[in-house]
Image (cartoon, rainbow, N blue to C red; front, top):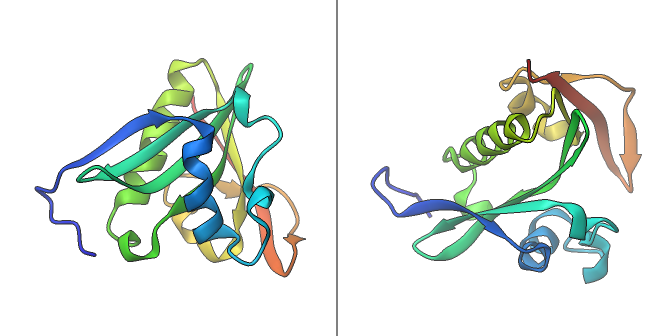
Length: 143
């Protein structure tokens, strides 16, 4: 699905429960459904991108003092590479600043590293694995 520039696209606050189906379908389709739940989901701020009322992208933000972490960032494959992830991450960075965070980080799949680098994020850990998927911690200052 190509989203035309004039399309009805909005980013809204959603519940953790609203993120689960997309998290599962995009990130871990081969794992049990509960695998995509985070133990502190109730403490997070969850955002969804909607196209014509349909949920197409999710991201969850957890702010702890001056540190913000985003997790479970997923966009439907038929909407990827159209700027929606950029809008979502830009939104979460702005939210993090509003909540007083001075640093933001995530555990990034290495196949998405170039995306995070475009936002000034850098790998700050060695490579580690979640199952067969290589990750690294990526971080940046918000100052």
